[in-house]
Amino acid sequence: MSDHSVLGKFKPMSQLNKTTKKSYIELNNNEVSSLIKELDESQFRVQQIQNWVFDHYVETWDAMENLPIHIRDKLSARLPLHPLEINYITDSENASTQKILFQTQNGYPIESVLMYDQKRTTVCISSQVGCAVDCKFCATASMGFIHNLSTGEMVDQVIHLQRQSKTKITNVVFMGMGEPFLNYRRVIKAAEILNKKMGFGARRITISTAGIVPKIRQMAEENHKYKLAISLNATNELSRERIMPLTNTYTLKSLMDSAHYYYQKTRRLITFEYVLLKDINDSPNDGERLLVLLESLPCKVNVIPYNEIGGSYNRPSENTINAFLDSLKHAPFTVTVRWSKGTEIDAGCGQLAVHGDI
Ligand code: SAH
Image 1 (cartoon, helix red, strand yellow):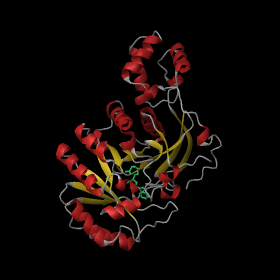
Image 2 (cartoon, helix red, strand yellow):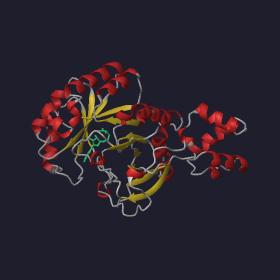
Image 3 (cartoon, helix red, strand yellow):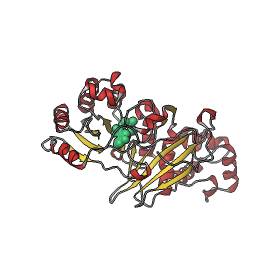
Image 4 (cartoon, helix red, strand yellow):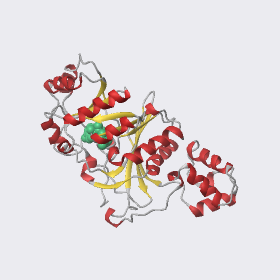
C-alpha cells in the first residue's frame, strides 16, 4: 500500500464533517446564471468563467484575468471554485504514470491516476471514497464504503489532472476507487459534463462496473453513448462468487443476460475485464469457458494480470498468462492485455486505497 506518511493534514475519517459548501464546478448552467444575476453582474461573465475553468483549468478565482477584480472578490467570498485540493503527487520511475491524492472539501482522501502512452493520455478517476462491493482481489475493498463523490468532485479530478498533465488528456476511465454504478446518477452527470463542457468524445469516456445488473439495463435504456466495461473475472457462478461476492445478489447468469440486453438495445460493444489470478481463473480451461460464455455476444476482452495488493492472491507466471491467451486464440472477440502502469507506486488497477488512520 502507498506510503502516506507525509499526509499530516488528514483527520481520521470518523471525525470528518459531512456537509460542504457547493463549489462552482458542481453548479449546472442555470445555477451559474442565477449566481451571476444575484451578484448583479452581466450574463456574458458566465461564458468567460466557463472558459477559464473548462479550457484553461485555472486554480483560483484570482487567475481569471479578464474578470474585474471586484467580481473575482465577490465570487471568492461567495463560493470555492474547486471542490478538491491536491494533497500529494507520486511519480512512477519512468515518469509514465502519476498518482494524485486529493482531499475533498470535507476532508475525504481520494486517488486518481494519470497515464501517458505514446498515443494517449488517460486519466483513471474515482467515483466513491472506498467501495462497498468487496471484490477479494481489490485494495479499495479494504476501505469499506465511505462516501459517494459528487458530480463536481469527479469532474474536478479531470480538471486538476489536465492542469498537471504534460499533454492533452484523451481518455477518461471511471476505474479508480469505487463502484460507479452504485453512484449511477452522479457518474452519468459527470460523464455528461466531460462530454459537453470539456469536449471528450463519448467513446473516450469509459465506465467500468463490477456488475450492478439493473444499472447496466438502465444505461442501455437511457442510451448513453459512453463505453461500458464489465469486470467479469470468472467464468462460472461458484468461482465468481468466491472472488466477487456481489455475484450472490447479481448472478453471473443475470449479468450475462443484462450484457446481451445492452448489446441488443445499443449495438455497442462491451469490454469485459478479466483479472488474471494465479491458480484461480488462469488455466486454459478457464480460457475455453470464457470463450463459450462470450462467443454469442459481440464484445471485447481485456485481460489484466493481477497487481499485487499484499493479500493472498498472486500474478500468474508469464508462461501461464501466455497459455491462457493462447486458449483464446480463435475467439471471435478481440483480446487485449493490460499491463497496468504504475504498479511500483500502487497506481495499477485495483491498487488504489487510502486509510483513515494516516
Ligand atoms: N468497481 C469498478 C471499477 C473499479 S476496478 C469495477 O469493478 O469495474 C477497475 C478494474 O480493476 C476492474 O476491472 C477490476 O476487476 C480491476 N482490478 C481490481 N483489483 C485488481 C488487482 N489487484 N489487479 C488487477 N486488476 C484489478
